Image 1 (cartoon, rainbow, N blue to C red):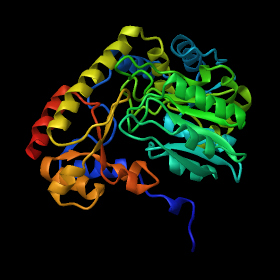
Image 2: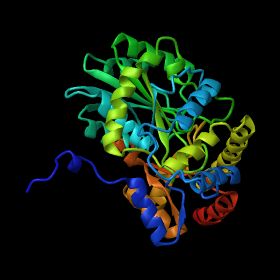
Image 3: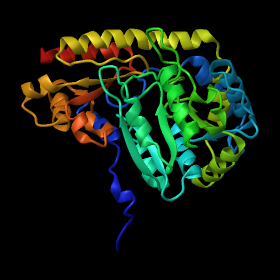
Length: 387
């Protein structure tokens, strides 16, 4: 029996694989991007309250009215977007489902989707599962810039969409207004969609600010904006995300979502609706923690022999480990990641998992620093064994 060629064309998540290896040796997981500290008590209490009030059955498949209204209010406050909660928001089981639903809703056979690399590892398989072909545009270190002419050449009559992740996983890049305006210009010229994953929108540093491409002139009608509660509220296991799009696109996203998962967890939707009303001091506190964590870990990694690139958002470093690879006498990034766990108990993600052109990530690994300072202090002790 021949099984699915589509499913066989990609592998399981390398990030989750590294987490399992880390857990098997009781290591410190700086591979998978989840906080190891609790979310705020008021957020937990909102979830408990919803459960105790018997919000335990299906909500409306595309999201509870409370949550959709709360999302609409929040994006107006923070993203300069005016959204119809009734017809332009779909609540999903995390941003992961939102991305796949969005692609399945708009892709036809023969379509192409542009992806920046290094990329979050789900995007490639998502494009394959949606039936499209991917075209990759490289972000170049140390500032993770793309070549404008290379991007223009990638657009053509087959281009259905471009996927943008800002702030970016795994690089920490925050796309500038100038870059987004150029992408918007190409989308309009080639009648393409911008699908923007904005899950790290509240985590930016050094004066950088997040801009939603949908807020630029003429872009709302050709944008799908994806987000989630996971990173902003430190609840990655709740699996509540959403997609914002014009009504004609939202109708199809909702159809795909309905048959994919039916709906996100009902009591957690009500808790996330509560989160949407949190004041600016919550977001400032969150960002300040990660800013201090970034600065702390950047010094540790440099001292231990890693070459760092610019990271102005999210909570990752994609670093160059070429010198340490020579020191370890390993041949590639996977061997280096395994050797690092053996020597220090620190888990990272091999860089090649973020590239289609594996040579570009051959000397790179990704660290996350979305951890408590107790974890970061212990990580420093272990990493300094390399010095």
